[in-house]
Length: 550
Image 1 (cartoon, rainbow, N blue to C red):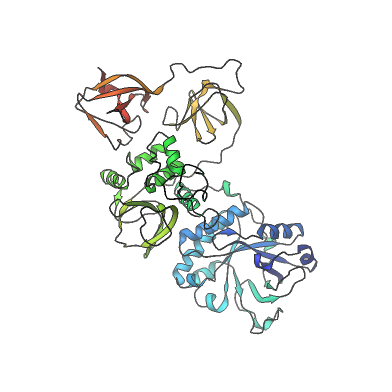
Image 2 (cartoon, rainbow, N blue to C red):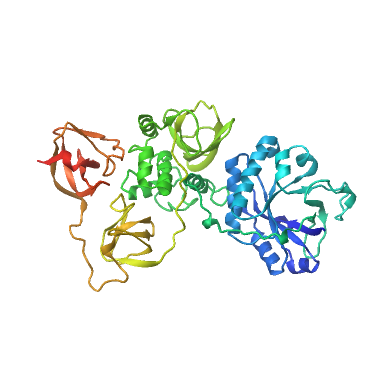
């Protein structure tokens, strides 16, 4: 049994798939993404043409990855592009790039295994495409040959587009026997293949990308890649002014204005807009993935200063001289910071903000970039390890309804009675998923995210008579002058001993005076913490029991 088909890409131009189908085409394999990990410009047209004309379809990915992290990203791009759509044939990993070949058998096996695992975990079949002589016989190891299906390219010296059976390779389930075939409906010459295995008889069960559980670590790495390479070679660029902060490319400049600083400011933390932002970018990423509480525990109250992050890690036992996937990496004793996407015996692969695309440490560049350094690069001072565990992302948010805020300045908190992420006003509508905890309701809020609000201030529809929050706090209002009554007390970034101390004024001594502001919070044990202003300009939380009214 054998079936014959073609493989195509944007290079083949606009294909008349109705004419191709009338030629009795058994299958078509489509290029899905190209160099730069962007979608082939003709993929959607070609996929729809095959489906509309009942041509069994598969896809191939020409890989440009040089490490596991990069090839996993390529695989995830394939999945996000497919988004659960059916394929009859496998997703083929196309190995033919010369720079990959130079990696050798062992590393090629690592790359192929990593790619195929991502694809098959999503419910698709997968295989490997490569050249017979230069790849299959010279580079591909026995481990891959024994485990996976191979689609082999091998053309005759005089390639006239016909199948010359006497030249068939002795291995592989498929043979690409020509790159010079002429098929009605295809405006160019086209690759022609024959398969000796009918994949259409094997039912695949793909799942949509958002239904695949991703570890928090991988979510962190994916987020970094997104800002380093949005839709190809389009990194996030810092801005000249505060305009277009959310756009990747518009208003690019070198004045250190970023969306990251703006968002951190909104969280009540030092956004440092207009200042070097490499550390702030990493803090912002950690907040998106782990929440602000954990982000502060990892980077401390001095997260906007690389040297402070390093010193905080040393004091808290998370400082190491060896790399770890997902760790923060400190350069030149605190001049710059990034994170580790992966590493091998030769290189450390990083994601960095406030850098550039040139090799080496760029401590004040204008973009987010993925980079690499020799494993023993003297510019690397050390690493802040993060305990990512096996925690996976939350399930996809499923809204069960909406609610409307009945009051202005209603806090949205990270957890019930926890860190304030932002606030909403009367009339603002939020989504709910039906989750409640005591007097708190879990909500999803535009421009804030998922958090918790006080249930009593949410209604299904706007009330006839607006409510007011009783005893509403005003963090800018001073309640009284307080005096420290203990020998020493820490000033923390939020209410609770588990939070780091603030960088500018980490502790207060007995008899020190502070302004106690109208923003008292409770820690997880229910103990009160005063929000205080120190020396008229530094803010933090101090145990209420350590302060007396003067």
